[in-house]
View 1: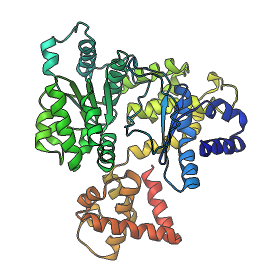
View 2: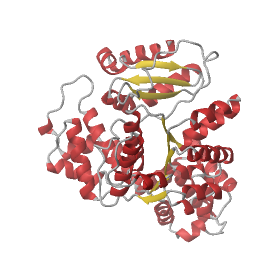
View 3: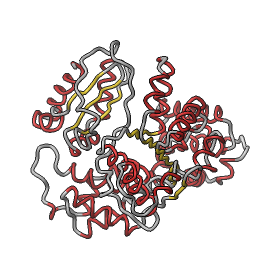
Length: 459
């Protein structure tokens, strides 16, 4: 594939041949079509390095060359091979002659039961997933009866981001695939994309056959199905087909079924057919266990002071803590240099090495309420002035800036921003465009005021 080969040559000039030879050249091109590049990494470290340093650059350069958006899909070779699926081969046929097929979400090899931290708040979901695996693989369940396991369908796990829902789903998928079962793990966005692509290609029969032949179906973040009519229709019929066939369905969301917004009542009813279980966030003790286990896995022990710094800094979710330690390991071993001596790593070095992630972590603590308060204080008005009906210049500009920051910093949908400010989404879009126009025009006073607010949000 010439575009990828050309990219590698450019990286040799920018990063050096040793870096490319060690980290990029071993990546296997599994498939390439008009809009997608499928790569396979040899191991977890290579995949992490690619995500950390290359993905954005590669997608940007490949797009600029071909004038078409390219999405890179990265998997890891033979981490949990399925007995039913032979090793993939490079498909040399052109995209015009390939059969229509779906590409599913990659699994994180770290997401196993061994790496999961059972706590009082998530012990029941943890045990239930292991019991389902035992039942599905014809082993004797220990904590639940066979009758109970049949009744627990679907399993619906709910909780905020970072409570371990995705980890449990991936661990369950990884374990079941080791036994050769036809297991489908899919995020809601991917399921929706599959429906849309199948409709456009006239391949709905392929979609239905793919999903309805599954032994177990696991769908992550079903709350995102909100307002997706055609997708909900297909989910409804897929659910019915699998449930009637006695196939296990496992779902996750950020709330209980009854609190789902813009989801059809018939789906909500079915989500409640089996068992609904909460998952709560890990406390500091649990996060400390997670950090210790991750350091053992990566063979990267840190002293107590450094560990405490990481726990104090990356405490919003287990995912952010895991990402931080992985980034720290990679960034201290890169560029072909000898690994940094662990006894030389200090909290100040970690702070400098992870400066960008620390900024992101602070953004994770950002809320619409904080944006409203900060903007209001900056202009000497109240939060109520921002959400009220006043059309005075003293209120309109700050309101537009607050809308812009909600979109720019938190990526909140236009309609939700409209609800926060009691405006329709077209007004929100117009306000945000006005701010973007001022920024693009180079209005120094305007940009200085905006940057001042941004700096205050980061403190």
